[in-house]
Picture 1 (cartoon, rainbow, N blue to C red):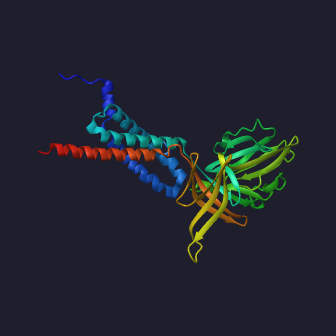
Picture 2 (picture 1 turned 180 degrees about the vertical axis):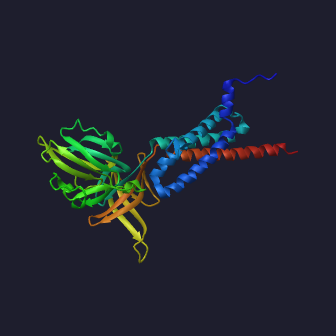
Picture 3 (picture 1 turned 90 degrees about the horizontal axis):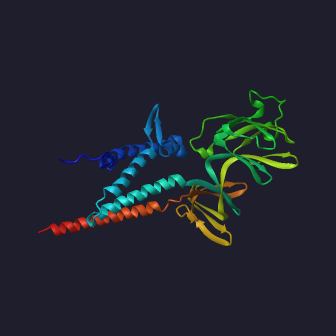
Amino acid sequence: MEKEPSPYKKLLNSIVDADTVFWIMPPLMVLLIVGTMAQRWLGLWPAIDQYFSTFIIWAGPVPLPGAYILLGILSITLLFKFLFKSEWKWNKSGIILSHLGALILLFGGLLTAMTARESYMLIPEGYATPYTYSYEAREFLVFQGDTVLARYDFENRDEWDFTKLPFEIEIIKSCANCEILKRVETENYDESLPYQSMAQFMAFEEKPLDPQPETNLTGVELKLSGTSQDGLYIAFDGMPQPIEVTHNDQNYRIILGKAQHLLPFEIQLDDFVEERYGGTEIAKSYHSDVVVRDGDIEWPYRIEMNKPLTYRGYTFYQSSFDKSERGEATILAVVENQGKLFPYIGTAVMALGLLLHCFLAASIQRKARP
């Protein structure tokens, strides 16, 4: 009489069952299609957050498994099958390599999801900068001189705590995407209130979020107390002049803007060149002649639309440009991805495995012929 398999054996068999993969692939393909199409209406980053960088997708009140759960099940199934159910024989080495390549791809995707950071640089011609800026994250910063005294994430503005500052800040209202209005045309305008700086002329009200997070104009209206310039102020994302006040003969600056990231080196833009189609204003191509400055290292490089710069784990792509009365500036998309080599390694291992499997299968067939 055949012995009944143990509960652990049953669990292992259910995990490595090939049917699990076939059940997981269809919802993954549907998720890929829906998430890609949603980028048209939601924008790139909101669609990624809602469909791909999530455990649960809500279809109304119904929870559905997100990409993390589906890919997690697929990864566990392949890993257990590779470790416990592989036939460790020479004639099966091609299949084993192919499974290993798939695992490397999945591991690389996990590493990318956990560590990758995308941002951008805006560099005017003739200038250098070590800073990149987030596409969507905003920060509320308080400087004492040139030192950051406090840093607050705009997304968590309901939890801001100003009690440790040497003066008082009270947030009157805020908006993730603001419409600028003339102060005198607002319904609650009161000329007796102590409006200061730009708040004397400008106000804002909430409007729907833009599908592209980088184009949203965030803003706050705040009240300062305990400074030499008390009153009501407003601060906007990208406002050219910070709020500047004095307290006990110390100078303070208050800024609302895109979150910054300091690179371990800086990039200088020597020249930006735009080529247009003849007789039109349409850009045909453009490139940036830059110099990477890292201590004593100076590395000149030309970044083109299909030729990015890679240095110390960062990749810089020619994304766009800006032209104004102040001159030309290049806009570089910056990607920090510690797992960028895994797709190449995984694909190479899978290709080698498939080729080896075909070679071994052909050899077996030749030997089997009379």
